[in-house]
Length: 503
Image (cartoon, rainbow, N blue to C red; front, side, top):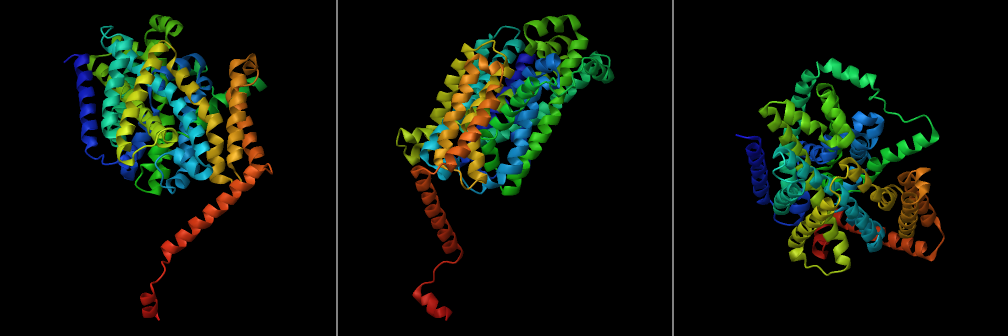
């Protein structure tokens, strides 16, 4: 069987798993959160597989060989740390809220206005991330078919396949396919690493070359500007990934709070460690094919690994590699398609259209299809853009538009609706100025937007305004009602007859 035949078989198996998973979907809770019943292994694999996407296999190696670890501080180190932070500081608190989306938290804590603004920032951020996965699908299918399928056609085919099984089975499909896909990713890339190292003269040669080129240096240039931009790059994914629906879905899909906490921590740790595998493979590729690698580094570094496998490895390893690539990309694409669609239907659309609760599941599926269509158009329009940069850019929106309302809402009782508005407004203005003017060359846009948004949150919440006074009064009344309900649930009132009997 040819490489194309094996890839086709893999796609069919993935679709079959998605269809089987669909039998478990009875309502929106099943569709969005897999019925809050996933065990620890599936939460870990779902977290790992979602994070280990196209940017890790295709974008990361090229960036690493050019700039070393310091150049890839965003991904995987920033994003991996985001998962660890979620498990450590956020998972337990959010899990106990028993909500469907992270937008629901903003609504319950601050009201509908903040809910909509933060949810819009989250939805927008997914456009670049999902777009990167669709772009990668097109690239991979183009390589596998040796140009028979164009990159654009590959995008359409790949997006359609992912959309189908995600739309049918929701989070159940995502979790089950991710479990299979993580196994393929790990086994496939480890096998490729050993074979590539052998082509390069042994693993010792690979490590020595990386040391000679100083690729393992992780810190920036020892200048104020170097440190500022390094910190900004790290926090883009580290902070921007925390208020994200796909992360939240893995937390809330867990069967209990311990699983919700442990899943992201383990998944993030494994991800950071395993991300070194494609980095070492690309070093081996440079040693094994010096002339070709030099040309590809100048033209398109994303082609390094696929070219190495396609031209220098036996058929079974080609099958393993492209299966691993497709697994990584499809697992990320499915999760990142589902997350914004769920958020949009739950937290944005109700502000404009009155939804029938009976049709919410159907609305989610329709929205998922529409989002996939817009992502496809976006990806085709940006064809040729670096995958790594597409992902990094996407996560800037939540940093300035959703992080501070989340962390202050959980850990600062004085946080108010007015503080959120000022945080989002001032953070967005600062980020926009630094992004679209030469000032961004002096001070990084993400760090600037983040700091100003934090100041806006604190100042806006502490201002002695009528709006803040009214909000605090509303919160006190709501907290009192919640406490009263909890007491009544624990100690229900006795009927007169039961009271007499108790005496």
